[in-house]
Image (cartoon, rainbow, N blue to C red; front, side):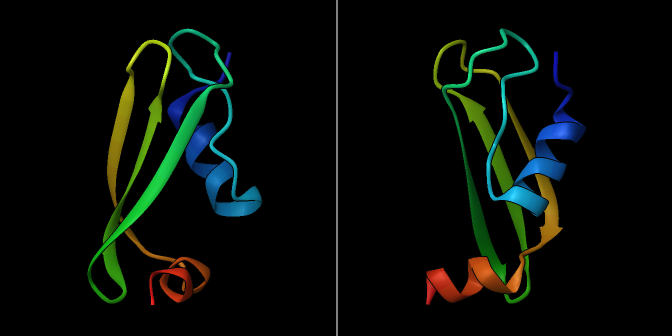
Length: 68
């Protein structure tokens, strides 16, 4: 089963949230929130069991471009 660290790496490299570390479901999503460019945070959550993680991060350029 995945760990949250593996999910964070997957978002960073593949732009995919990966399977939930708690229940194993692939029904997961992620979102970057920009506080002040480039600082923000990353949220990853499971739509099945509601497990989630929120981490401070430097928001990647590709995500900032989508946010406008």
